[in-house]
Image (cartoon, rainbow, N blue to C red):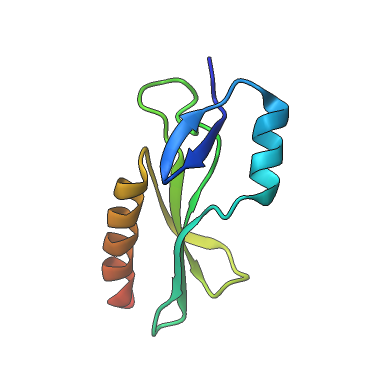
Length: 101
C-alpha cells in the first residue's frame, strides 16, 4: 500500500521513496486556501501528503479544518481526494461557518 503523495501542478502523485517524499514535504507549499471569517473562525485547507483513508477506498489527501481563532481547537473538518474537491470543500465550509454557527 502506498500512502505517501506529493503535488505536481496541483495533482497528487504517489511516491514510493520515503526520502523523496520527506524532502518534498519539508519544502512544499501545501496550502490550498486559508482565511479568517468575520466571526473569528479560521478556515484552513491543506494538502496532507498522506492518505488519511488508510487504503480503504479513494485516498483522502486534502483537509479543510475550521478553528475558533488560529490557536484554538478545531470545530469542523472534511477531507478530499483532489485539489479541485478541496477548493470546493473550502468554499462550502466558508459559506457554512460565515453564518456564525
